[in-house]
Structures are given as structure tokens and as C-alpha cells.
Image (cartoon, rainbow, N blue to C red; front, side):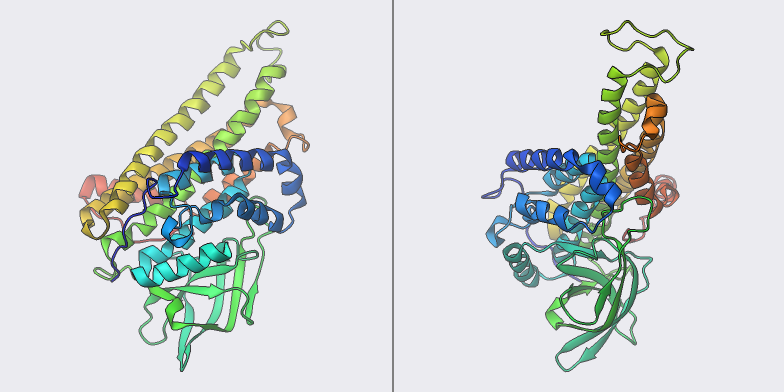
Length: 409
């Protein structure tokens, strides 16, 4: 059981969410200039992490008192969405970093969380890894000076470029899953890369192996057990927090593609010629098929965005409640986040498929790189099937059942 630290609000000293969003837009514009070339090259995202570090966005959620930006999750989600619109893989890298670095507040005590956050801000760490519920735990063997970590994790985000990893491990005997912080500089840690995937090529994701990697006792953050009473309701907010990261990655990718195809639609010939009249040169497009298609996609994006905003508002209030949060409030937030993730995933898949139809044959040209939005979105949504989220929403709606504590990939 962990106690909740004081909630960090955007009104804390030193926090300037408007400036942070301006920085995110500048970074997105920078990423957009060479997004196609970088994605097609598929190199490890060392340059991309350097850009994130130079922007100051890596420390966005760290309290100002600990050397960070002091922003809240509403600002962080907006930043992730802005970056994902320009580069879906970098948006995923940043969103995963925000969630994994925030886990110290969910699962560790306040003093330990403060110590780690100060070190993270001072070193401008990039955090990777993963603590998904479906991931088999690594083994954490006690020693005289702490623990040794062994095993193989099948999937982790940013494992090829991270300064620190947060992973799921268990102590032999009890089998209780724990969140563990690992320094990637230790010998015995071998990270893989997800470069062979058809999407999210720059997310530096993949498997990672651990061979007697030393872990200090203070770097064991806390329990990840789904058993009743093992976690406080505040710690239970880790799951909806992660799901809303996923939702905003999807929303950003969908909005980014819509923005690009809109420019094509204003300048190019109708994809359905000669079945509909072509407007006079220089006039706004009037093809009814094109207009209807864009209308449907805009509705899907706006509807998913509205649901995500509602879920973020609920989560922000829940985080502010801290130790006073109860199980029912946590369940309501979790269900709303699951609904938002499902809606965003569906919208992103619909947009990334049908927006290309509106462009027509030019959408297949490699030089435009429009296919990267579909590939990034589809790769991302494969990790968390929408059906699981819909079942949770339906069970809560019909039976009042609380969603199980389940952390996403």
C-alpha cells in the first residue's frame, strides 16, 4: 500500500503550461520537416531523444520543487498529442516516458519518489520499459546489498535509448509483481529493437534481457498486484493514466494525417473523377464525395477528442483527491479512460484508412509518407485490442463491476 503524494497542479511555481505547449508546437514543427525521411530510414531515435531533451519537455511533469516543469497531466497529454501529430513514434516515446516516470508517485512512497524525481530532473533522464499486466514478471533475487534481476521482457518502449527502465519483476516464493527501476548502464542488460515492425519504427521498442543486473533496494518502487487491497485507489489511477496516453497518441496521429490530407484535398484533383464534377481551378473543392468523407472523419476525430477531454478532467480531479480517493471514484475514472481509449483507437484507424481514400492514388507515393500514419496507428492499436476496453465499459454499465487493475503495453 502506498500513500499519495500531493497532486501537482499547473499553477505550481514555475509551471507555465502555455509556454510548454508553445515549445511542443515548435518541436512538432521541427519534427515534421524531416519526419518522412527519418521514418523511412528507421534508425534508432537518438537524435529524436536529443531533441526532446533540448526542448525541456522530458521534465515537464516533475514538480518545480524537484527541478522540473511542475505541469499537470492535462498539459502533458496536450504535449503528447501535439508531438504525435507530427511524428507518431516520437509522440509514443514521449507519452511512455511521462507515464513510466510518473510511476514513482503511483507506487513508491513520497520520500523515495522525491529522491528519484530530483535525480531524473538533474540528469534529464529518458524513461523506457513497461509494466504491462500481461508481461511475465522478471525474477528479483535478494542479495546482501539489494537484488539481482534476471529474465527477459518481451516488449518495452524506448528500451534501446532509455537512461532508466521501469519493469515488472517478482520475488521468488511470493510471486508478487513489483515495479522496479533499472539503470540501463549496468552490465548484464541487453536491449533489443523493434526496427523490424511495419510501424512505430522510431519507438525503439522491443525485448530486453537481464542477466544478474544489480538493483538497489531503494529502486524497488512498490507492488503491482491486482489483488483486492494491495493498491490504494490513488495507485489504481496508474491504469487510466496510461490508457489516456494511448488515447492521445491515437488522437494526435489521426489529427496529423487529417491536416496533411486537407492540404492535398485543397490542391489536388478529385480521387473520384470522372464520377463527379471538378471545381473550377482556384475555387474551393466542391466534390460531394470528398466533402462527405472529410465530414465523417472530422466528426470521428471531434467525438473521440471530446470523450478524451472528459476523461482527462475526471483523472485530473482524481489525482487531486490523492489519498482521499475511494474505489468507486477510481473505477469511474478507469471506465471513462477505457471508453476514451477505445474511441480514440477506432477514430485513428478510421481516419488513417479513409483519409487516404480521399487523396486517392497519390496517397501511395512514398515521397508523401502518408502511409506512416496508418502503420504507426495500426502498430500501436495492435498492443491493446479495443474489445478488452469495451468489455470493461459494458460490464460497468450493466453490472456496476469495477474494471480489474490492468496496465497496458
